[in-house]
Length: 400
Image (cartoon, rainbow, N blue to C red; front, side):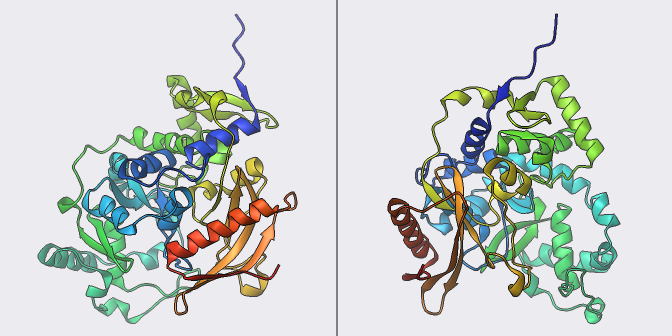
């Protein structure tokens, strides 16, 4: 009997499932509640945390894109007090669902990853055992501490510069970060976004760590959870904890196909195989048309895999924060405009906190899009909503 050929799906079906998994299919979503917060984390794989604060922190903006205005203090309480989530390494530094902790514990046991040890910066970034012992001793004695609670050590007299041009942080600050990666410390709160560290044994629940295969398989299952239907290329770097080599990715895919925890499918216009979790294909034909308008944070999980955005949404996006100003194509902190399931433009905002003004420095439309009056009214409403969320009292747009 001939083998059945893999089921085939259109790019439109793949897009709809992707937007549904990202909770961006129908906008705005219902108001943010604790169960919806957990559902988003478990569906997408987490919220990226980033220090850039042009408008607001990345994880707050990512939630706003879906749910509109909400109280940030509620989100902080759910993470740090209620412990429905925790801070660790997912795509990059991320807010992860607490259900992910067994995989986090396995990564902690394997820290530092071989790739980090082989990197040119590692010998300069790693810290002395003396510094690590000092950090652990003081936190054990005094409870949660921040980097500012530690003074410069003798080893800080020589301030090396890292390869990307930034000063090497002081040794004890690096020890805090390394001990967090290794699972000795946990981030238990933030004060003005500065991390507060405590002993992990006083904060984390105590589930059993995932097996090595479960940890490696999480790269695939978390990636497919967030993407819906994806090729291997579309899964690369969506999750970087774990960050697999090509042979490891091949072994994970082969293992999952043999166990039938995933299925192979075809997508119109693509020659390479795509994959999906079987449960995500149920009801795929009943997914609604994408509707609504929102602005997407540069560090949103929808943009974690840039090749995927180019191939499925016809949208090329690069973060230009580290590009010299004269060489930027669109701006410093550009927000893509998602409208009815398509990227139709991008704008470059700047919050002037001293004057309470949200300035839109430029707007660029995609070649295929011509904004209608109805669209402009929606965009005006969304910009006013963003201004309210970030504490601005006025919006200033370019004349055009």
